[in-house]
Amino acid sequence: MYLSDIQIVNFKNYIEKRYSFSPDINCIVGLNGVGKTNLLDAIYYLSMSKSYFSNMDNMNIRHGEEFFAIHGDFVFDSLEGQSRVSCIQQSGKRKVLKFNDKEYNRLADHIGLIPSVMISPYDIDYINGMADVRRKYFDSILSQLDKNYLDKLMIYNKLIANRNALLKQMYENDHFVEDELVVWDNQLISVAHFIYEKRKGFIHDFLPIFMHYFSTITAHKEQVNIQYQSSLANSDMQTLLKENRQRDFYSQHTSNGIHKDDYLFEMNNFVVKRYCSQGQQKSFLIALKLAQGEYVKQIKGKCPLLLLDDIFDKLDENRITELISMVNGKGFGQVFITDTDKDRISNLLTNNNINFNLIEIEA
Image (cartoon, rainbow, N blue to C red; front, side, top):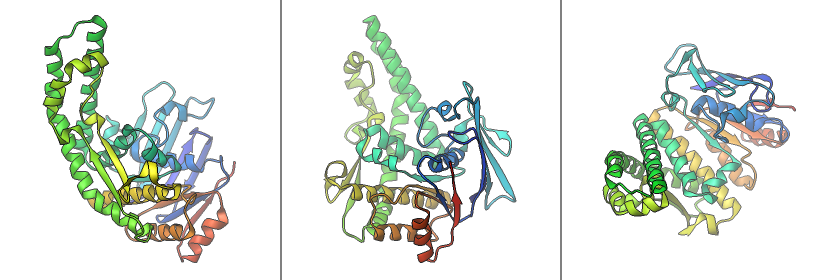
């Protein structure tokens, strides 16, 4: 599977542009601010039906315009010819996603068809951010691989929203009715345990792959670990909800459950956020994303698109060379790399006998 062409209209800084790509490595070069990252984000839209960088689709419409449109022509191993994926957002209207001109009833039905992995400077938020950032990241991986997981997660989030709305209503009316909470609690229990078991099983399978990639990038200099932390590890959802109903009433939100889970990142038995250098953190994140690509390939049986945005900052030449060699191997499919230095990326790939397609973007 690979993306052969993309057409972008009124998306961020693009008026209208079309690009053609190689099935292998594509280098997108240009000065800062010309739209290299925006091109990667347009590709990500075709995969995940949303932006990698923003939750507000209307904000991605070019200033002064009423819509944006992204059309991508894909070649799938299992299908003859090209298949078109289109994502269209009109101002103030529902986002539309189409496959071969047939609109999806649910955007979620598209997730997993075109798996992708983005590596971006913004990924540092996975280390420095709050628990929900890490939780959403791992949920996005599982959602690409398991539609049932995505459906259960959407159900759980809706149930939590309804329970929280009831708690707020009770608090404002100063009237606590436990039986009304029990109605929502009974629906939450089985869904929560399903999600917990899926997350636990995922980390168990994912961790060795992640360790392998990190060890390769760093030449076996450091040891890493990811600990999945959940209140369901030591209790069950029914007990947690029952024991905290009064507390939830006064705080007006559900204080315990899998929506509070976290993932602890460690290097050499120390917390990565507190004790690791910027270079070590970058290596950690790159290994995390490469492991994601490998894991997706093992489960889905196809290589995800690999989108590498400004990856050379804070990496020494040896680690950059090792990274490029890995993504050029048989384990990865189509690759997109952005860089501000045309000569640097060209020389690096040429010196390693790697064929590539060069795309220069101007303001």
